[in-house]
Image 1 (spheres, rainbow, N blue to C red):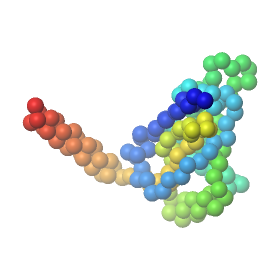
Image 2: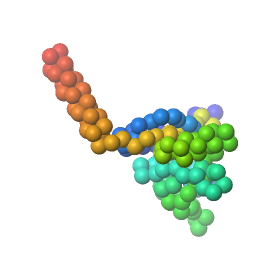
Image 3: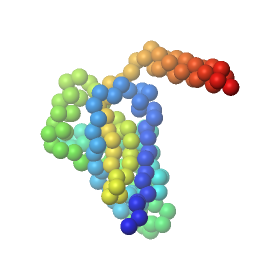
Image 4: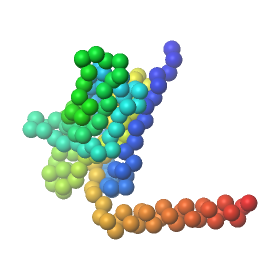
Length: 155
């Protein structure tokens, strides 16, 4: 049996904007055309976030999954709320954290596992201040300059 095509869609902006405190991997409730679009790699989690509803269920908001090209009138809406599947204990723990300390839940990575199911890696995160972001940019520039100097020195 051939290995299914693995998808790995990252949210690079989340690592820059937020300080990651805790991570979980959650399943997603999807329609047939949604999973087909994800397997083609036509999804984006760049501006998405997660919220609890009134029934203590976790939903991902603003996740874009493009319409499936070969579907008929049974196609899905590109930006709709999608339910995340987690244990009740994990949901209660994270809901307490959010209410207590004003944290947020952001998706970090959308991927397919070896069985072909779509999974979402989510993180409990705290927003960074502007000076923290400037520090990250400065460190990145210093590393890049240092690697250029090393490369020039070795040649």
